[in-house]
Picture 1 (tube, one colour):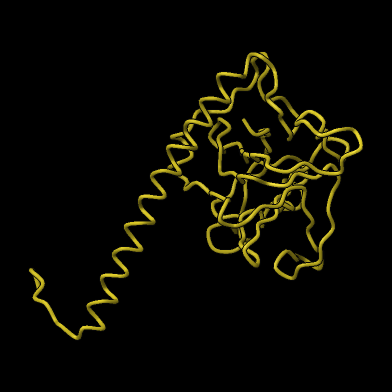
Picture 2 (cartoon, rainbow, N blue to C red):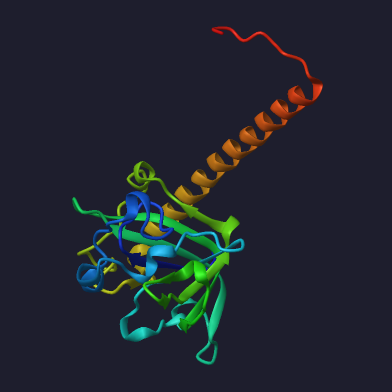
Length: 215
């Protein structure tokens, strides 16, 4: 099993900036409450086929040794970074994840115009290929197990939860099973969409117009 870490962020729908339905965000702690935004607002924005994930860790750095890194490592690869957020009506849920992410101990500065907001460039702690990033729809989020809180081994006040206690072994296995099921369904949908698109293109090239019932 690849190392897994849970990163608690503000609740948004798309995480592509404060646009559309994401003009207002909820939860996310005192910073979001005070400023109306957080550095995670771009976490699922595809930038040159990459995604950059931010979380506010305690003390400004991450304990990557709990994921298997040595004390001298600056980062660790092939991490499953699972993003969670608290719903305004209660409960903390998975909103998405990065597979095979590179996870850094310290904040990574980067000056990408796509990650600039209010004259500030937003850095990151995790980076992954955009193809390895999955954002759940609002409805899908409640189909995953709720994040355990206020119980032994569960997520506490920290935004970074390693879930590495013995009590959470079965929970992590359940999350992995749900992720695998979701990605299989997603793969099937993508294959159908590509196949359907190919059929349309073939018909257009052939120049044949077929009768469609109801027209």
